[in-house]
Length: 222
Ligand SMILES: N[C@@H](CCC(=O)N[C@@H](CS)C(=O)NCC(=O)O)C(=O)O
Image (cartoon, rainbow, N blue to C red; front, side):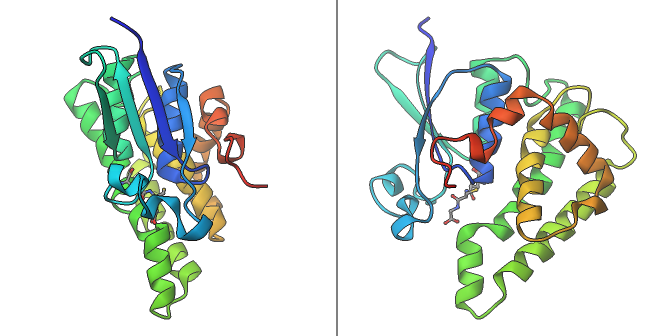
């Protein structure tokens, strides 16, 4: 089998792209990075050719060829949670989603609190629309990030394991680091979330998490 060829189309400050970068680095996978600018000229993600590839007009997108795919075929995958799951097939160690059903469900639960319950409410397109409708974008984002993280803190407070769901980082931890970064961007005092902060610190000590940070990406703006 030939090695997989992976290209990540993302944006330095995109939290969903950041999750995928964490997974790629944890697994030690080489990948090409192609920046899709979310802000310049109204956003490359909302125009062709990118919009043809992802009609949702969002990053990240992973392009995959080689490996167990038929020769010459390239597959495109969007949605960071689906991408992290596919990466468990491409490189099973370490797993982003444990195989044991209860442990897997717990990781998915915590992942979805962020992926479905927080991030979509503070997404660029949603905040733009809140602004157009006369709302306060920053207050809106802070409100929903704060509510979601408070719930996540409660869901995890009784668990003393080093990471959100066990002894090793999973997809849930890959979602947590970028979400706390966004919380700070919108002025939240993350000291309110001691369990989440402790996990974040443990993650930050790992090279994979450090390399995935926005400011380490080639398209990072000063
Ligand atoms: N559920 C999607 C969310 C993707 C997403 O919202 N991406 C953001 C950046 S983090 C985006 O492209 N936003 C562009 C916009 O809202 O216009 C995933 O996990 O991949």
